[in-house]
Amino acid sequence: MKRPFDTKIKTEKELKTLQLDELKWTVNHVYNGSAYYRKKLEEAGVTPGDIKALEDIRKLPFTTSKDLQEDYPFPLRSVPFEKIVRIHASSGTTGKRKVLCYTAKDVDDWAEMFARCYSYADCTIEDRIQIAVGYGVWTAGWGFQNGCERFGAMSIPIGPGNTDMQCQFLEDFGTTVMTCTASMGLLMAELIDERGLRGKIELKKMIFGSERASDAMRMRISELSGVRYDQLFDIPGMTELYGPGTGLDCRHHTGIHYWADYYILEILNPDTLEPVPEGEVGEMVVTTLKKEASPLIRYRTRDLTRLMPGECPCGSIMPRHDRILGRSDDMFIFRAVNIYPSHIDQILSNIKEVGSEYQIILYRKDTGGKDHMKIKVERAQGLQHSHDSDKYIRKAIEKEIKKQILISCDVEIENYGSLPRSERKTKRVFDNRD
Image 1: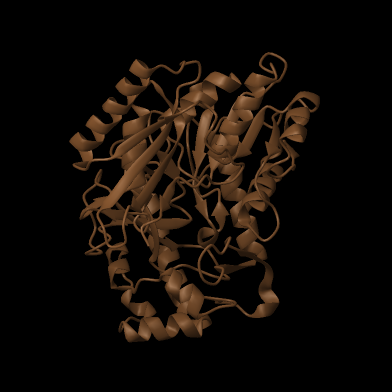
Image 2 (image 1 turned 135 degrees about the vertical axis):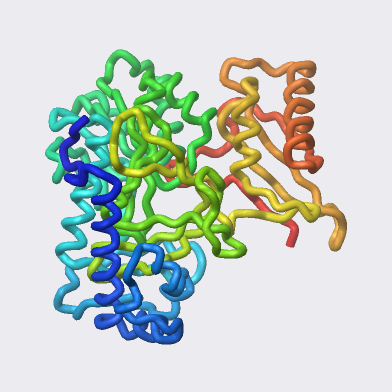
C-alpha cells in the first residue's frame, strides 16, 4: 500500500545500499566537522576510509549520554554555528540537560519523518489533530506540530494539562486525533467517560509518545474514550534522535516501523555490546544517516526492545522493533534479582480484576535490614470492595510474581482512581531503601 511521505525505496537491497552510502557520509562528516568525534575516532583507530561495508559499523566507537554531558553546551556539534537554526534539550532529570543542535535540513528531515508517522496511522489531511504534549525547549510539541503541518492536517496546539480546555476543544473543534503521553490519554479517557462525551465528540485516534503503555492501560483508554483499540498508536522518540517521529506502529500493530532510511538500529546485549539474535531483547543503539548538526554514532539509548521477524501485513519495506520494553538503567535489584518494571507491568496486565495504574515501593523496615517490596494496584473500574475479592486479587498477583520473577512481595489493593494520574510520564517505582 502506497502511503504519502513513505520512502521511495522498494527493496531491502536498495535500503542497504542507501544506508552504506549515508553511513560513509556521516563518518566523514563527523571526522572533519567535530573535534569531539574526531578524537573518539582516532582513539578507536578508525578513519572514514575504513567504512567499506555496513558491517564496518562495528569498528566505530560508542557514544553515550556521558559524551553529551562532557561536550556541553553544544555536544557533538559537527557544523559551524551559522548553520544552526535551533536547539532542543531533554527534561534534564539527572545531571546536565542533553542539548542537541539542528540545521534547517535537520528540521526539514524531522518534519518529513513525522509526516510519515501520521501517514502510517492512516490519518488524512481532513483530520484535526489536538497536540497535548509539551512545547518549549522540549522536542515533543514541536515535533508533532511540524509533522502535522508538513502532513497537511489541521493542528490544534494546546499543549499538556488544562483538562477542562482539552475537553472543550474536543467538543468545539471536532478533534479527530489526539497526541499525548499514555498517562495523559488515560486521564482524558476517564474525563470523557465521566462527562458523558462519548457520542458527542469526533475523536477516532490517539497517538502516544514518551512512555510505555501497558496493554491494560490501552484497553482502559479504549473502553472509556470510545476510541477503538486498534486506533491507539505508539510513537517512539528521544531528543538525541531528532525527537518523537522516528517510527510508528501501523494499524496491524505488529511492531513499530522505524525509519531505516534515516538511521541504523542495532540491538545489542547491554553487557557484552554484541548483537543479539533477531527476536531477542537487547539495547537499542542508533547511528544517524542524514543528521548534520549533532549526528549520532552508535549512540547507546539504554532503551530495551527487540527486532520483529518477518514482514508486516501492511507491506512496508520499513523494518520493525517491538514497543519499548523498558530501559537498561531502569532495572532495579531486589534480593539479588534483576527486575525490570515492564515485567511487573506485564503480569498485572494479565489480571483482569486490576486497573491499569500501579506503584512499586521498595523499602527496608530497619537500617541495614532485609529489602521489602510493596505493590499498590487499583481494583478494576466497577469492581466493588469486598474482603474475599481483595484477597483473591492479592493472592493472584503475589502468586504470579513469585512464579515468574521468583520473589515475594506484598500487594495492597486501592480503590479505582485513587493512584495519581498525570498529563506527563507517571512515576511508578519508588525506591526508599536508602
